[in-house]
Image 1: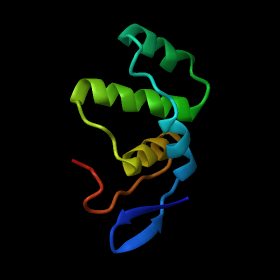
Image 2: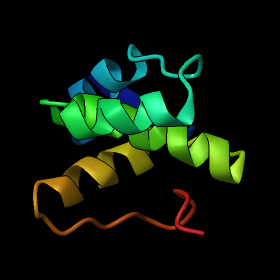
Image 3: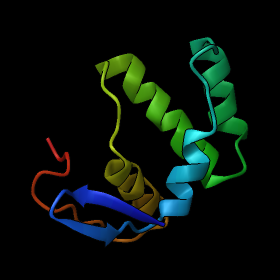
Image 4: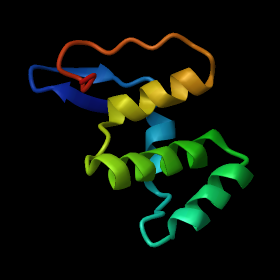
Length: 90
């Protein structure tokens, strides 16, 4: 899947399929306790990433960029993650 990260160029986003599958999980209607249960019982990394995305939204009141979700997935796979300048490290 190609995602436009920079208006000047189109780049292949690593883990684009993960981002797609993560965004289809909606947990905004769950209580904190129910969200904790989902995280504990989750069998897929996609679902775990979706829970992390919801937790960040609740605590920090920000939405994660697709590149940040890709980084979460990379770290869950015990890989090194690198984000270019302007991709949401701060």
